[in-house]
Image (cartoon, rainbow, N blue to C red):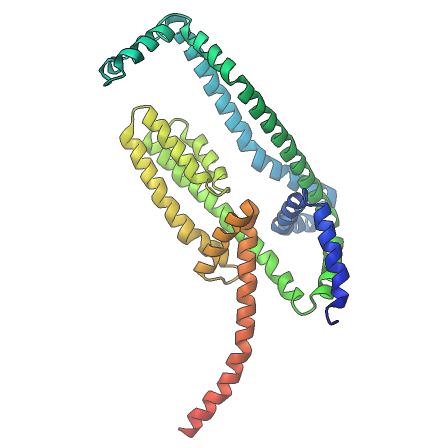
Length: 356
């Protein structure tokens, strides 16, 4: 009967979570972004900005920060595709003679040479080959395009709902905090204050760690791209920095650039870049990132490391914030429980010293 008053609120929360299950991600991201950027919002308000102007400016800043690199990447890919189209057009007009190494293939030299001469060496053969290949794979391509289209539309809707919720939180943040605090004090009277104090420190510490590491990896790997001779190293560095915000983004970036260098005939530069990227990634992920994230909430290295790894493996990107927060709660409780024990041990130690 002790927990009977909590039964109805918990049941209502479960039903509400089930009802909003497809939009919990948008609500969670809006809340995280509000917590991360709230000090900047407050600073703008203190300088005399109206709440609507401050909220609009912060949303515009977030949009430019996340969509700007996508536009640059799309522009670069468009230019590369235009160059590839011109190359394929010229190759289709003249045909591609069979390379010398094709004749030295063991066992497969004769059929491979015949296939090449029939399909690629003749003018117009490349176009016919592409058309026949597209005809064979057209059903699969249509299905993939339909799936990708629906996924893009769904993510665009979630992004819109996230930004809309964030805008409302900027405008009515104190009211929302008041309601949340009231509910938290009623449901968890003994633990809510601890949750309330740890959450912003943990979330902002994680954001600071992720953002700092993304900037660091973008600069360091951008310099490495320039030294290795990769094309457009500055643009690739910016793309790497933004991909570093996503788990697995940085290794994907420098691996693709290494493969590009290998395809251009620079195996030494490709191997050197990949080795340097792997070493730098190991040092950053295992030492620097956990240190930056755990600094604000006084977390030990292993707690932050396992919080990050467990969170991202279980919940995806949002787990990068949830994992360290749960670890911070755990260590706050452990330290609070250990404090009374230390106080009780101290008088006993003093008595022993006096007896001696």
